[in-house]
Length: 201
Image (tube, rainbow, N blue to C red; front, side):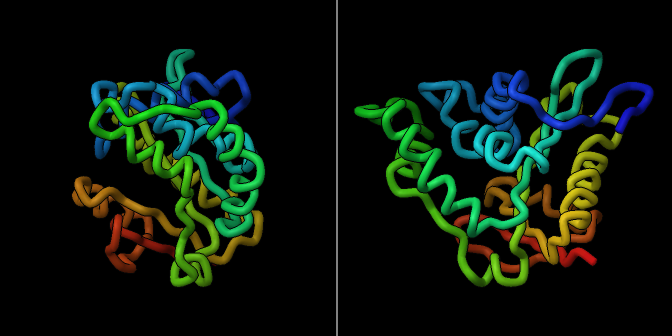
């Protein structure tokens, strides 16, 4: 999907570094978390890169002036995705980060998840089997690109026959719920995050 000032395209292996960077620089409830993680790869290891690797048909990047400044990633089947990560991705990361101890404020958020990966509740995955993540650097946060990225992802999920999708929003980033409501997501419940869902027809 090409526009006059940028394009949304499928993510490729060459975008891996950008996925790590964008995830890091938006990991503090949308703000730069570079000072909160000892390793710049920590947040992307959990929230962006495995999606591009294991669900490539649902991984898209926003490129403006030749630079990747945003992404949207998703899995059409959260339960199957979590099972695949448990078998293939997390063991690799456990070896990669073996012996690491928390140093910066948010390190444990990732290191704990590496050792004991969280799984989504059936209350989410039964009606909303898919989920997505979107992050955009400040230079891409104009021109309605967030809306365009999510809509692009929703089209891909609908084409795949997915019946519903959910998002988990940081409790510290509640204002963004308005953005999702404008895109058709409805509040579901709160626990470790604010969960919102949308039926896809």
